[in-house]
Image (cartoon, rainbow, N blue to C red; front, side):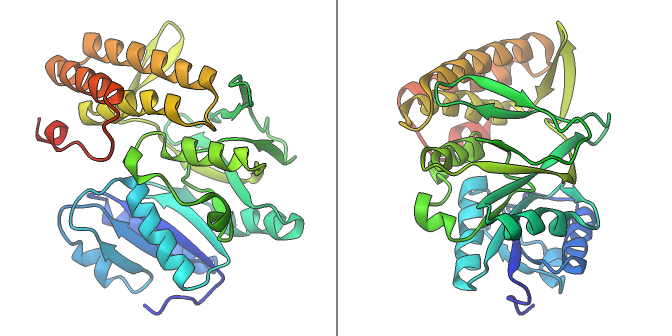
Length: 299
């Protein structure tokens, strides 16, 4: 594929993906005048995606983390001088007018970052978008079925579109985080530069958090793998070290990561694995260990 057909390019990060679902996303983007780059974190080269004519495929030959994969995609987009970059993961599902719904208000109002509203893929409810105030206080926003644009300081990266110039102002993703809190840290970095995220309710996206979930005292607790919990615990401690991350927010994330891990240790079958990655994440967070931890992935 020869890129730069349009002024917008999607960066799709994959890891051992369902090829049909990724190709469906690529075709949907193509019909909406959006080019696509697939950055593959799989340990093997995906011949099916590589042969797909609707995208530019890059295999990293192993899991380098979502931040590093996104940065490689960003670099490719900047080389091609794309005006807009939009991020997706391998399970993203979009509607037929998704790109236009995000881009129109962005172009008309010169917004630098726009994001959709998210709905649970299984249950259909709308996820709250959490706005972090400068003092670290959290305020949850919902569209309530209305089309009025609203702002927030943080969103998840999937489905978020940005003006490519923004990376010259605030920098790219922090690859040292590897996976968890990558989007939170980058959004708060933007917020510290006076850049807010504009949420466009007309743009709707299906999303699913965690491999599964369970209810605990009225809360929906997502269940991630034990390896993923390592990064969640470790990186919550790292948040304390960033000057643009409110200390109240960082303290809350550390507390919730600890409580979440204990709940998983108590309720899941792989108790030893969850206990090991929790302790490893806690110790490595305190030691300021960053990047990938091969010891955890071997467990």
